[in-house]
Amino acid sequence: MHTIPTLTDQYQRRFTYLRLSVTDACNFRCNYCLPDGYSCDSDEPNLSIPEIAAVANAFALNGTKKIRITGGEPTLRKDLAEIIHVCKTTPGIESVALTSNGYRITRLLPSLVDAGLDQLNLSADSLHPAQFQLITGHDKLQEVLAGLDLALELGLSKVKLNVVLLQEYNKAEIDNFFAFVKHKNISLRFIELMRTGDNGAFFNAQHFSGQEIETRLLEQGWRKTDTGPHAGPAKEYSHPEYAGRIGLIMPYSKDFCSSCNRLRVSSVGNLHLCLFADENQSLRPLLSMPSEQVARHIRQCVLGKKATHELHNNLSGSTRHLAMLGG
Ligand SMILES: Nc1nc2c(ncn2[C@@H]2O[C@H](COP(=O)(O)OP(=O)(O)OP(=O)(O)O)[C@@H](O)[C@H]2O)c(=O)[nH]1
Ligand SMILES: C[S@@+](CC[C@H](N)C(=O)[O-])C[C@H]1O[C@@H](n2cnc3c(N)ncnc32)[C@H](O)[C@@H]1O
Ligand code: SF4
Ligand code: SF4
Image (cartoon, rainbow, N blue to C red; front, side):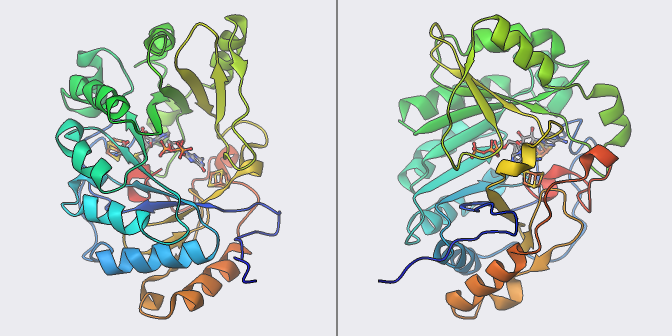
């Protein structure tokens, strides 16, 4: 019988999840990510549909089960539904997820679901419209919230809301965020602000640890839920009186990377072994070769993956901001 190889590194971590960026362009100006807005600094075109199919195939041959499409802002790609379809119909891929800022999500979502989208993560760092606008540069909170409701209505298997923790912009709202999931079957995830190459001063002023929230959750009767053996580094909490769950993504916490289950490919086809790696390998020249050859190359590369990031040493590798890689 033919057994599917798995992507495993020298620390016995298994990689069954690909985060595929489809553009690094974005229409928002989040103050921790692209405070001056997006500016294009390369002529290299984004991966085409056949190239995305080749990437998906090679990863699937290596046992990848889930592809998350991210960016920049992936909904800026006019062929997003086709990208989703190509990923979803790749043999071996079980689920396709999308991370978006939600700018035009209610208009787009039905066609994305028809194309095979299974899971949706949207971002909103404040539940106050004016504060949301201050953080992102756009008055779009109502659209994002409507997008969450529509995703639930359309029956997506997982719907999440990402909230980056910011000392001066949303720390006072933590209890509002808890209350938000009382009657909504979503997972709201607090993400610790990460230092990138570009945001050092902002990071120093705004970062605080998710540990404080964990303590508050436990005091209020929330309990850690089992997210399964290959769930990745996020923690999740549930409460008998709440329909939704609260998640914590705490990259500065001990052992965060020991459960790393993901690899990344940038919008121009570079394989990044870590969100904060120093170097990357271009897969693009290989994508016209047989998928098995590309798959073998990826297996070799993964052996060089480091145990953890170096965020503790104030190093973010070559990652200037997360829009360039999709978070
Ligand atoms: N340091 C680090 N941060 C991550 C990692 N994965 C996700 N994050 C952070 O969490 C943010 C939210 O990620 P999402 O794109 O919503 O998806 P996710 O939570 O990683 O994954 P799902 O389990 O698929 O929902 C990312 O943009 C990053 O900021 C990771 O492997 N390392
Ligand atoms: C890079 S964005 C790409 C997808 C889409 N544009 C969005 O905002 O959802 C993915 C996620 O990364 C988060 N993010 C961006 N920069 C970050 C940083 N420096 N630290 C922590 N999270 C960050 C965003 O809030 C968002 O939830
Ligand atoms: S976090 Fe997402 S929406 Fe905000 S600037 Fe970065 S890529 Fe754009
Ligand atoms: S920081 Fe790097 S090694 Fe750690 S969980 Fe994220 S991608 Fe994996």
